[in-house]
Image (cartoon, rainbow, N blue to C red; front, side, top):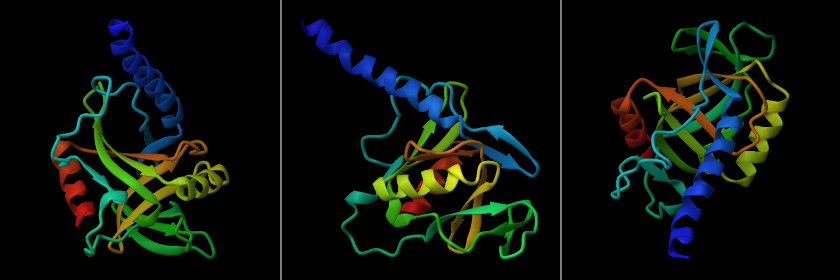
Length: 189
C-alpha cells in the first residue's frame, strides 16, 4: 500500500508531462524567417525544478503587495507589413502587430523557468481561464502568425504560432539559466 501510494504521484506527473509535450508542439520560437520547435520533449526530471525560496517562479495570484510591475502583453503579429497593423521594432527588425492585446499580465497565474532534458531553457507562462480561452480562440485563427511578448513597450520575445494553443500555457525559449532568472526578476518587479 505504501509503495503504491508513493508511485501514484510519479505516474500522474509522467502522464501530465506527456500530455504537456503534445500540447507544446503548437508553439515555435522564431528568429527571422525560420522557426525552431519550442515544445520540450521531456523536462529535466519528472517535475519543474524550482528553489524553495521561489526564486525561479512568479505566482501572480499570490502577490498582495501594491508594487509597480513590468507591463507584459502578448500580441499577434506578422513579419511583413499588413494594412491596419501597427509597426514596431522587433529584436531582428520591424514587426507588424494587431493593436488588440491578446493576453495581459492579469491573465497570468504563474511564470516559471523550466529546463528540458536536452538542456534548453524555457519560460512557462500559466494562464487563468479567461486568458486560456482568449489564447485558444486567437491562436486557432492565426496559425502561422507570430505571438509577440511586449514588456514595458519593448518587444521582448517573438514566437511563431504553429497550432492552436488550447492548454493555457505559453512556452518561450531563453538562451540560458541566467537569462531566465533575469526575466523572472523583471517580471517580479
